[in-house]
Each structure stands twice: as structure tokens, then as C-alpha cells.
Length: 387
Image 1 (cartoon, rainbow, N blue to C red):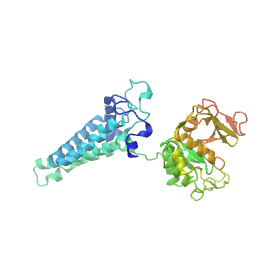
Image 2: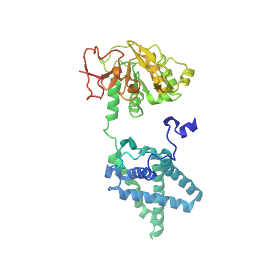
Image 3: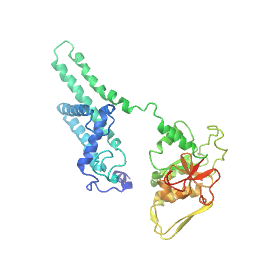
Image 4: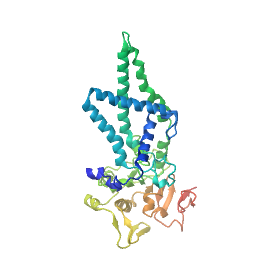
């Protein structure tokens, strides 16, 4: 529902009156990101107060001049733009209620009090609107100069002032360019190639999912692999979509020619990954176990003791694993996150970059060709690493 989205019910945030950090710290974070917009290539430091300051002030003033010029010409448009920019700056700061900035407030030594990453992308539209206002302000200066200059072609002679609009392009180019940066694609390629044919891989969130989707949907690489975002299982639509996309009719075929010899021939699955009706999916919610729950898997059973809380994502993930493991190998992007939350990391086996779920006693009889990992590698003693 719209109300649930607006209140961010999924994340259960505190009320906006209960600030996660002082407003001044949250506003400082906004201004830090504002400072990044105009000349980041001059100095890559995330902190303000560098050589970028003069250009930040320049485009800040141009934006104010833009608002002023609109005020002089069209009061209703001024009211609209002022409301928009206040909503997208102060309004968002209050609404989002971020913790201390990722790279600001070093005096706050507890990293849990800081954001886990930079949050500039939340304010992108605000900065776009300010760039629009700065353009209006620059045009107004050009217009005023044309009125002052006394020659036959005043606006032509003063037109070079408009070259100021190109400053962000040149001053951001070296920072914003992604030329020759293939890290995300290469990582995604290696991760997908670590998954056996028709495998399922559970990812933790957006950052380790979107590169995989790019390779599958744009380059057509390993589209047979079912990528499941653990966090999306909390939604009502995503489990149903996964079920539909993995039916025998819609399951995409494994291309055995992509890397000949890497994988043996594998039969296409005959079943979808989730054997629940839509009505049953809708009824899945967080629950606390009143007694021990044992889930049987081929070769091993997993028991969750009474009082264990299994949320919607946990329950649907376990259902997918239970219903699919006979036909589809199960992988995780890492041993942390969902795999650890489900208590399945004790059966983790490293396959390239991916982690395969092997439901058998790895400690008693490690598979041939594998060695027991140590806590120094991956932080999980039961991970097995290929020779």
C-alpha cells in the first residue's frame, strides 16, 4: 500500500521526531553531497573545504539568482520551484532521518551510529533541480549583461558567459567517467560462472544483484541461473514472479557452449522452484516457533529450536530450497546474510566466488579434491576451498 511505502513500514524506522543524528549533522551530510556535484574531479576527497569550494559557492549563488529571477517574472512558478527545492532538501533530510554521515563526524567513533555507505543518491533530484536553477541564474546574468553592454550585438558579445555552464562537465569528467572500469561486470561474470547449470543463487541486496541481472538480461550470459534477492522475498509479488519464471515453459535454457568442458550436460528442471499457491504465499509472515521445527533435506535435516523467529523471507527461502534442491543446486553469494541467518553456513562449500549448499556432514568426510578452510579465510571455519 502507498501508506506503507511512505512510512517505510518494511524497515520499521523510528518516528521522524526521534532523530538518529542531530539535524545539523544530517544537514551537513546534505551539503557535503551538494559540494560533490560541481567539481569533484578537482579533489576526490569526500570532505568539503577543498579546492572545490569556490565552484560549490559559484553554483550555489547561481541557483539563488535563478530563484530570484523567477520570482521577478512569475510568482506562481517561484512558489512552485521554492516548494519543490525545499521539499527535496529539508523535507528529505527530515523524512529520511539518516545517521551520521559515512565519512563525516569522526568524533563519533561508534560506526553503528554512522550510515553504512554514502547516501548522496537519495538527493539526486534535489541536485538536478538546483542545476536547473543555476542554469536559469546564469541565463539571467547573460540577459543583464546584454542590457549593460553598449554595442550593436550585445548578447553575442556577452554569450561567452554561458561557457560557465560547461564547468561541471569538465571538472567532473575524470571523476565520473567509468571508461575501462569492468570490475562489476567481471565480478558478476565470475560469480555466475561459479554456479552449476540451472542453479539458484541467493543474493543479499541490490549491490550484488544488479550486475548479475545485467549480464543475464543484456549480454544473455547464464540466464539459466535463478538469481533470488533475499530482501525481495518480503514483498508479495516477488515470490510469485520467481515461481512463474521458473516453470518448465519459461525456464531459460543452459548454454553448454558458453564454456565447453566447464560443466557437464544437465537436464532442464521439470518443476518450478516453489510449490506453494499464491494464497499460501500471501499467508506467510513472521512467526515465533512454539516447538522444534525439523526440515528434511536430502542427506541432512535442519532443526530450528522452539522460540526461533523465522520471518517471511526466511520461511520462503527455506521453502524454495526444500522444493528445489533435488533438481537445482543451491548457491549463496556469501556465507553471511541469509545463509548465516538460516543456520546453513555449516554446509557451505566454496565454488569459485559462489558458496554451494552441500547438505551432508562436511566435517566427517570432506569431498575429494577439497580442503578444510580456516577462520582466516572468509571467517567461517567450515568453508571448503578448492585446490
